[in-house]
Image (cartoon, rainbow, N blue to C red; front, side):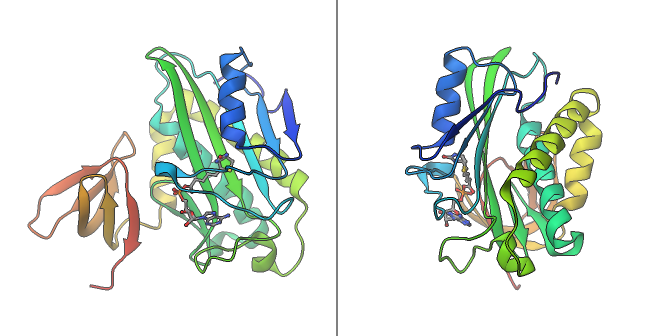
Length: 243
Ligand code: BT5
């Protein structure tokens, strides 16, 4: 996918949601690679209308505007974002402490350090895509499941170099995904801690339990139920089960 990410950056001290701003920018004709960053979001959002919260100036709230070429495999947008954040986080905390959780979380020591929200607008063949990334850098909200990079390493972590590294990594993975989508998918598969484990998935169709076998070419989680059937799940929240 050609074009440098971050060639155009719009910064807000405070904004409702960087994803909302980025979608509006794309509607107004923003170039591929335009980026919206904010020190604070008042309406940061996750999937399914959930909230993304973070103390002001504590982390990265960034949304990247993409105009993928026709035929670009859209499921790979979330995959490339997770790989890029993963590389950025691994460089800070060490590879062994950072894992990826299907479909869109990056964890440190099993706790969520980053969430990714990809939103699409447009029509087939002319999609515009916003990749929203929330990364807890120097503080996390008071949730038992959340962690920040600074608390993981015990020292403050400067945010700007992280943003530069993150955009460079995302650009690299997007380019790679344009020419070798299967290679990028298999890198993600290797990093996904979810695979090979017994999990409970709260999916739109209901709660299912089984063995997380693999992901398919669309990024769907292949869950083997106890009766042996294999169900591809395109969305859901995964938790590990002990059974
Ligand atoms: C996500 O949703 O994880 C996607 C979050 C994307 C946020 C970015 S910030 C920049 C851009 N602009 C936006 O408006 N959004 C994007 P989901 O998988 O649905 O997880 C949401 C859940 O994560 C919440 O219900 C909380 O339980 C938890 N959570 C909220 N804030 C968190 C934080 N800072 N750290 C860890 N967990 C958090």
